[in-house]
Length: 328
Image (cartoon, rainbow, N blue to C red; front, side, top):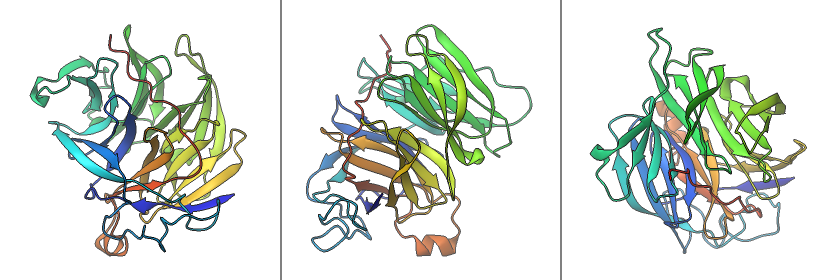
């Protein structure tokens, strides 16, 4: 098993940075800061991370070394250079690129179409689920696009009430509820052939796998895939070999599981609240990891000066190409 260490990047820390996704058209990374309603864009740049606490110099954890050595990240790591930030008028759980060049945001309790180079105030609401009339405030959380261009996105209650969330599918035919009685809908990614969906309802402490019909987007045969030994699963991604890379909230790490659920790699992150991860760059060989300061008290914040930052690692794997949302 590989033991690796990620290195912090230059963008300043956020409260709850989440949902990294590589936009191949713009050659940029997209991610969000949920409670502040921010959609960030950044370019990968050569030269190595330079954020506070970075030790990616010649003798630091960014240095090259043999695969699997403690602290090795693969060497020659890029940094992230901020390009632009959009501010929405509501919390934003996720953002994905669209086939048209626009962006689609799961924000508040609806789906917003953000036309390229158009003011955010002109965002168009595509759909919104009918929520239970129980007085519980909810918001969108994680989202991802399947290989056919459909969006899957989930919700949660702000107070994390058990069973108050759901998982939805949005496509050209409208909005469909796939799962209900979810607590914190998280972590969506597909196997390379598109026939398996990996999914985390975080408080369960495990990642589940569904049989997935690529033609219809239907789910079936839910079963446990991997149970975490500490922390809870948050966002996740799948590489070209079918390995599942899971961000561990409360664990300060990303875990990679083989398709048979055996542990492949453990990536140390200098922030306990690790929220998500995605492969980025032209070669999809850089793993970008998001983290959060939310939920950390003053003592933990002093102990984790890089909490809330984005981190990078080159783990010797490549990601799957990003599929844009099919908006036309």
